[in-house]
Length: 168
Ligand code: GNR
Ligand code: NI
Image (tube, rainbow, N blue to C red; front, side):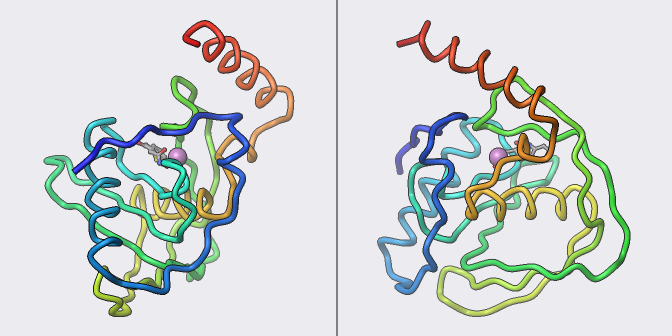
């Protein structure tokens, strides 16, 4: 198992669109374990492969209090099943230290594959729904800061660029 480095905004690699997973082998299993280990180490509730510079469509989440309920979604997609939005103060391991309110569909149906390639469906609401949508955005090269004003996003970009220069 390895702890992987998490890319930070405005790294252009976070803008890549991930490719579908087609091979469900031990190598994929190992990458999933690394992604989970990296998420737990960073104390996140979710992590998309894109964030660790793997441009394949899979993500992990654990929204449990006890941090003992890892969930893996491969080739995930979702449908909005209730015409209702919910707001959440979102953060992102790729945008460390910044939080902004984002509005997203409240209840969704997620279709994905597990690590054996088996298709499954779940209905998600609340934090789980927010988190899955946030992670699927990553696979499409999108970040939560894309939903806020250009002014706020540019301020966040400058601050993070400054931090990156100082730690370089
Ligand atoms: O750890 C995380 N917390 C979080 C809080 C509100 C909305 C979304 C998230 S996901 C984030 C981890 C992360 O960056 N995943 O991509
Ligand atoms: Ni994120």
